[in-house]
Image (cartoon, rainbow, N blue to C red; front, side, top):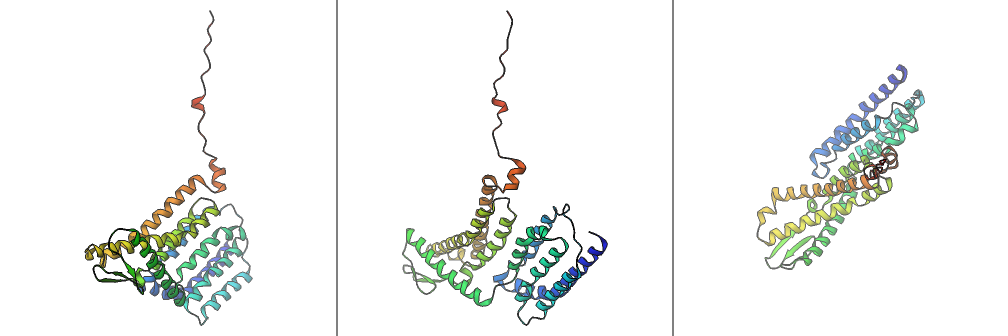
Length: 303
């Protein structure tokens, strides 16, 4: 990259950083004060790691001069998002567009194509709309209750009933409320954030990556339902102190870690048995070494 192109690129990135800094500051409040969005602050960190890891193979590609038109277009995108009367969500959603324009202008499509998934992944840092989040929470509460009731009916012990987002234990006359925090929506968001980053960085075929992305919500839901079932069993056994407070919160963390373990195990299997074509061409198929099974030549003697 020549001096002129580097200067223009640095100037455009400084404009992006300066204009979007208030948006990051406003989102930081949502990340650290709202427990529902507590895991979203790691999205920019993961995106930066993936970006610099992808950038290692950029040295062989040619660099194009940065036209002034692209700088003007990027600044216009920044200003439109900045002066938009909408919330910081809209402003943050315009950031990948401006970054894509800069990369396309400096390096071209060959370098933009590999980082498009990274730019799309960065959108996860934006908290979802409140109405969508409320409807998703309500749906997750309903599904968690239905799944937990199905599993509890299969287990031996006292019967349980579900009544208006609560689980009734008739034998012990207890009503256990399934609150929004127990719906599993936080586990789903955290597992999606980390799971998508792991899947995006995996070296397996795209088809199996998409299949695994589709299975992230069922995995999160299954482990959250298991957490609810475990809590109900503890209450039924009279061990209330292990089903509330810090123990209940640790069970939520354990559900997320268990889901991540399943995803990481599936990725290890896919990388071994369904690697991406570039890895297969680089290393070749795994074949047994036949050199050790080759019979030794017969020794001939003259009599």
